[in-house]
Amino acid sequence: MKTLIEFINEEQAHNPNATGEFSRLLNDITIAAKIVNREINKAGLGDIMGYEGKQNVQGEDQKKLDVFANDMFIEALKHGGQCCAIASEEDEGLITFNNKLSNNGKYVVAMDPLDGSSNIEVNVSIGTIFSIFKRISEPGKPGTVDDLLQAGNQLVAAGYIIYGSSTMLVYSTGHGVNGFTLDPSVGLFLMSHPKMKIPEGGNIYSINEANYIYFPDGVKEYLRYCQEDDPKTNRPYTTRYIGSLVADFHRNLIRGGIYLYPGTRKNPDGKLRLLYENVPVAFLAEQAGGKASDGFRRILDIQPNEIHQRTPFFVGSKHMVEKAEYFMRYYSKEFEPKK
Ligand code: P6P
Image 1 (cartoon, rainbow, N blue to C red):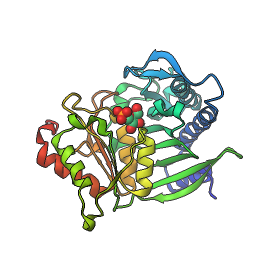
Image 2: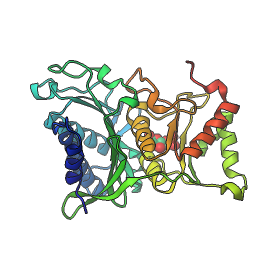
Image 3: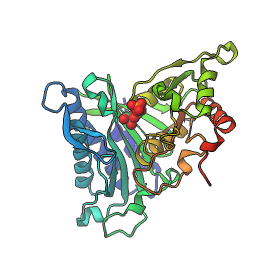
């Protein structure tokens, strides 16, 4: 079994310009992931469950583990010195460190430190999601918001850690998707899922149907299509919805399927955040042969204008996303973002 460190070093060796800084940044992320994993695995035992008593910038009640995870990833990135700025779901503004080491960091990170945290007390898989960009601002000073407001097609790398029946790191640097499973007995991530590819022929759709009455007609018609009988196209499909983006996407990545969080008349931009949920997952989906859009535009081509910006999200098996996009164009043109 190849360790993550061995794999990172091999990837670095393929890149003649590599200085090792990116490898160290990735390693910093995995150190924080192991610490967060340890706390999650004993969450029921310590005083780490429950609410922090504060709300994050999204107006969501912060759970103690949300804050703990956020602190751990920020601390690991600060200590490592490769990262000059962070955008986090848990913090309204940009996080910078203004010390000599970090001010010369080449990279910036956007992250959702603990996605799906409402599932913690019911023992359902949750995850950390991250995007890594190269800074565009001058080194020597703290990173800026513009360093983060880059389209996903500028990503250096993206990935997630899923804290589930096992803990896995799934990431890509643009050369395919690889999955590593944590062996807690030795504290190492070992390559368990090399060259991950999302099956073309998925038949699982993931959506919160409680919002059905507010869905665009295009989504309602796509769901009708999924539920109609047609042995030629392996329908009716089945539905699975965990309520953790990382868990729903990870299942679809392995089995094939589509995850949808559409906009509605009440919330045309939907719920999920572009920079640290949709972009990193879209990057992985495309690297694995899948597709990701907001129903009309490729997610990775969307130019963000605010670090907590939301967009509708359709991601998964290519042909399933394309079918959903067909229904959106045919029935819900009014939802198409203005050029
Ligand atoms: P709803 C978790 O809060 C999250 O951001 C994603 O992980 C998840 O897929 C989605 O929101 C769940 O949202 O509205 O269905 O509870």
